[in-house]
Image (cartoon, rainbow, N blue to C red; front, side, top):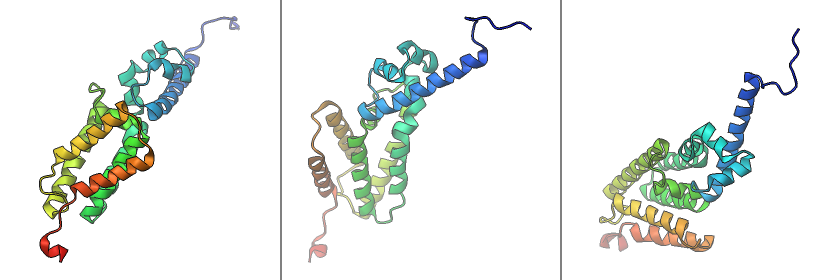
Length: 204
């Protein structure tokens, strides 16, 4: 029987196990980094947290876009789609608008990566752009229903909602982060500003 010599080339199964372990370490580090600081975190920091080299990230995922697509479901999509799905279950259109805008702004405040998605920071990521498409579809659907019911000011459009969301993303990403109580108070101001005006007969 031929014995394995010390320092011999590792077996293919050992190499595969090491590769899987490295990939999981990178994914875990990326999820933590992206959730905490957004999708633009330097890859060197992700590699350091994973205990690997930056080159290993490129070897396993092909670079930032591949890494984003490997973790975007856990980082952004699951929570964002949960908000959209729950919004569609709310019967009262006024409550639907209030929930959606409040929940979306909450996500923007808590999850910096959400703002990177909404700003389309990495347009070459097909998954990121699909999330944007689904979000835009939900916005259009909500505003169309709200305008038809009179729950919104008649001049308020889906484009206006999109602008409010993008402006908020820009402010949170590049501006000074406001205290949570001030942020939530401004959400209330926005809701009050876009709601439909009661008619004269309604005010009597």
